[in-house]
Amino acid sequence: MVALLERLQAHFKYLDRQVGEIEHELTAQLREDEHSQRLLNIPGIGPITASELMTALGDARQFGSARQYSTGGKPTLLGISKRGDKNLRRRLVQGARAIMQRIERRTDTLDTWVKGLLARRHSNVVACAQANKSARIAWAILARGTNYRSEQAMPAA
Image 1: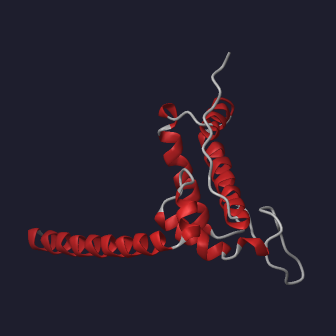
Image 2: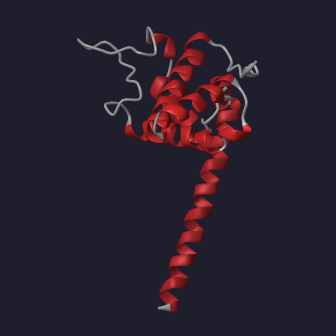
């Protein structure tokens, strides 16, 4: 049993090194791309999600809006619904959950919005809403060529 566990541990270490190398290569490629750098500034979007968004959206200007749907062979940009890319949806929701875990330390307008939703809705609903908002922000940044602006929330009077 010990020999089997040692082999499994060695295999796990090998796979962990491989994942680390791939992530390093991916990060280096993202540093070279201006659009990917813009996506990395969005809270909850990391290197893997940014690369998936770049792959899924491509030239975001081909979509008329972030809520576009399709019939008759027109291009589609499915939102965060379960009809779209499940892997991308899962990554966006995971990013939203990461934001929610550290929500008490954050103070920008997006975080104030999330705090307000958490007071009224279940955390799963809030995570999906935040993921949806992140997807729409990503589309807007890519389609308009702008950068993400994190605005500080105004203190309550």
